[in-house]
Length: 199
Picture 1 (tube, rainbow, N blue to C red):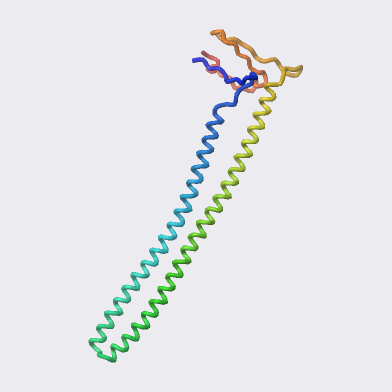
Picture 2: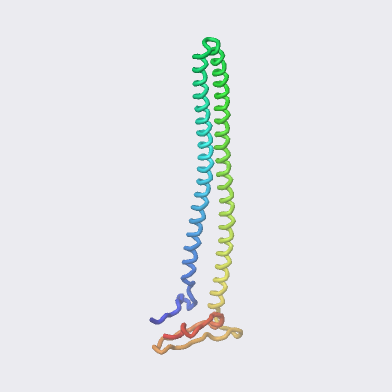
């Protein structure tokens, strides 16, 4: 099948189709980047929350075991020592319960601090991701502007009427009788191989 170059109504070359593919690739990279950042933030938050919950559960289990041990000790002392020992054990139990309550409050505070730290870490990760995204988008926009400018210059050069300083376009006819005309300035920059001209 013969290939003919895409031409605009003015005779200039149309923009290559691979620009659209490149734009789609850039858009896909943006979407993948956003998804990776969102996933990283969620994973960091979830890991911190799980660690805090796990620590709180271990402390609660340990406290429950200690309480059960103290209660067993109290029952034994009541049975052996009678009323005096029971009074002393009750005082120890009350002291232990105060200690348990203090430790519980401490664990709740630590858990809440861990949650706040996880939220701060997630916010910081989101802020950094937003900064990286803004920098990346700025770079992409600059590259787009540069590409547009270069394309406009190339088109302007190609559409310029031939003058004394410009060479005439390259014209030829293939074996089937089709006529081709290429601006010399553009054709001079093309890397032409034998396979591109063969039918």
